[in-house]
Length: 338
Ligand code: ADP
Image 1 (cartoon, rainbow, N blue to C red):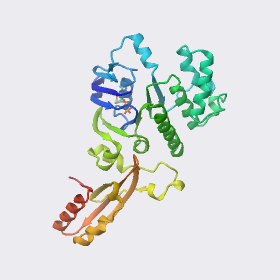
Image 2 (cartoon, rainbow, N blue to C red):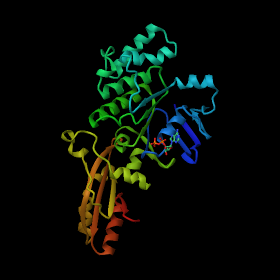
Image 3 (cartoon, rainbow, N blue to C red):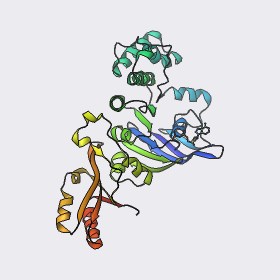
Image 4 (tube, rainbow, N blue to C red):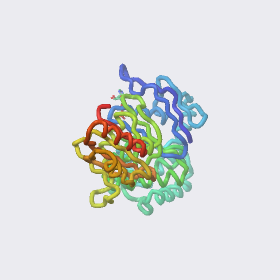
């Protein structure tokens, strides 16, 4: 299911929490919405998941307008929406299977059909045989798996994940992201992932919108945004990326090592140019030296994106020529303060 938003606004008193947001979330994909705390992510999700109405603007699921549905239609529509949260929101008085059964009980599904579906869902999220487990005996990752199963119980068209991995350690985060990616493909789901972690966007999303002060400051395919970020906020997120896996599991080509000392230039490469000895070729042609401060190559949507933070030392006209040659090789060159 495709979700479109047109000029959405939501204010709380004088605070403009969501400011004129227009976005298209394509169907059958994982779409990330990233922003720092207070950027307006949760408010936006409450609007597009129909938990709250916007002050103005329109929301469409495919071609159906849904922001102004009458109450009974709203309830029916909301049953086709799955949600998971940072703190799982499970019932501690119910075991895993009973938690998963809950939305089907509310929807009036027949008891036997519920039991069959619960077993199916436990299997899908990798918890086969754990249905009777009390919630308190489950790990954080297992609790999120129960929450995912519960969210999928009524065959939703869309799954909203609000900081779903923020309370989990890096390894569990990775396993939950892998599960969500697999489910998305298997069930042709649209998944909207709200996060403040660029690692989550890198490892799970195909598209991303970057939010700041209630507005979208950048939007596009994750690969394009990583290779050529346009906004200062996005660059800041990228500069603070860390590998998601535990240090002893980091593969060499997964590694990003950022030092706090910046260089004057940030070079961004993608695809084939990451492996090419472009710098040494340029260093031989022009009277410049590269002093590399930090860098790494990351795998984004199946392609390599490289970043190097460096100084280019030399006479200014030689530096200019070197920069032009870098750009000709398809490398994006950002100069500090420009
Ligand atoms: P994020 O999810 O990105 O952290 P939120 O959507 O939670 O951001 O919040 C955006 C802004 O709106 C914040 O300044 C927050 O304090 C404010 N806000 C959110 N919900 C409410 C509310 N129900 N009442 C008043 N202010 C709110």
